[in-house]
Length: 551
DNA sequence: ACGTGATGACTCC
DNA sequence: TGGAGTCCCTCACG
Image (cartoon, rainbow, N blue to C red; front, side, top):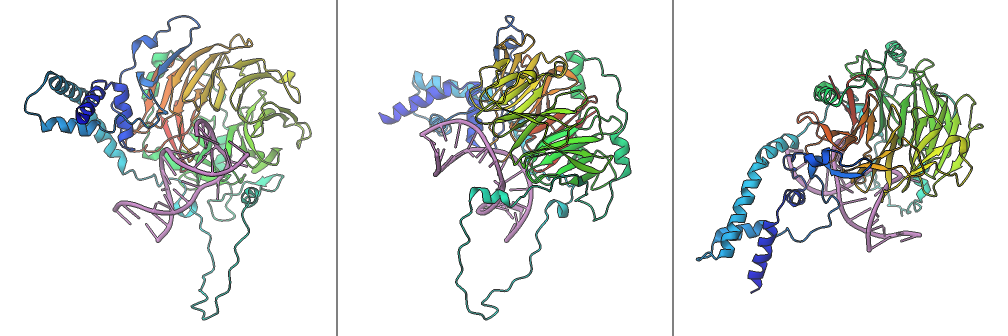
């Protein structure tokens, strides 16, 4: 009796196999399993049903229906049960006929989704050789040279009684990586021989007058076709920093593609695609000692790159002066910043402890800073409204709020507006680049959300929710969706999906393009950024490599 | 208030 | 060559 019951249950499982749970099964059955070929985006979610009506779409129609799946125990037996069917029982009952028919249908479905083709694609990804372009191995892995040692036994000496080292405490670990000294630091190239000077062409490129008229925004169709023309190749991958990338940015110049990336150990790398200086165009610096979590080139002075680190320093690389100047400094825990004025002289800075500071760079030191405690836990992202610079959006630990910098108080500042609906911590919140009429948020609850902030009332309405798997785990930089500065209504986000990809969505939730490359992209690109004027997109990986898709 | 487990990609032996 | 070890303020859950 027990076996019959088991068979019946199994049959139900097979019968209920839908694209969604099939994919879940495929994903679970092997860690390296490849998702079946993308199912077409279902058209009914494309068309907005009602004005102001928030909608939820899943990526490509059905992706990640159950991303945070607990271990379902119902699917472990599926395969074995299908096998049992082929053993056969002498007489086929109506039930068994139905079951065989189900199996047939499922096999037809499996072949229809091109699992074989997908497997082929996957095989290409199993043996990727990381790009050797950029920082060389010797530079990439600086090994401490220790004096050669000989054991006491070989020295024919008496063994001594060893003493245990003192218990390490939480703070001790971080005392080892002390912050760099204050004041201007020279821009020493740490991937070059000592005494090597900055290449003069770098200053030339950085000061390039790129004040070309901002292109007219393309319609969606044209935009998507430009995305499709942006390709990766082996020359467009390079190791730019030694360790995992936490932040990256494009320099606004247009004659070449110049990029910056910051890594886990305070390094900042500059890479000119196809450049002939440094290691394949890479120059490496070390202005910080801990993760460089945020960076941006000054839009008013493009020879300046501002970078901020967990070590508590916010510095300004000035290629003209060849130094890193101090901009702002606290003990530790800086997380995020954005420019508050067009001339980039004022900034809003957020830290781990839930404060934001308004920093005026024209007054040296921290004297003119004003600190405001917002959240008891943390501030993860700040973004200033592109037109009304007094407004800035803050991703606090579990809420997203918009504040008015003119109405901040030391504590308990009243938010102008709050964006509700996030159930777990929020990794990013950004105003749309041209009008500021939208805010794009990324949340650990596996949703990307878009809010309408055009009215800036106390509650901004939620427009779109997109399912997007955000569980990068401990070793990867958190994913965060960011707008394309050229296109008011489209954004880019990295993805955990295999084959690895970077995805561009329209604010309606509709996928516009997936950037993939079976030969040159095999890792998760957590950090992504579009070029401010050119058709170029960068993605940074956990091994310090930047990948550039461009036309 | 802890303690724990999951997660990807590299390096080293 | 492959598989174990490493990752160093993560997050969410129990």
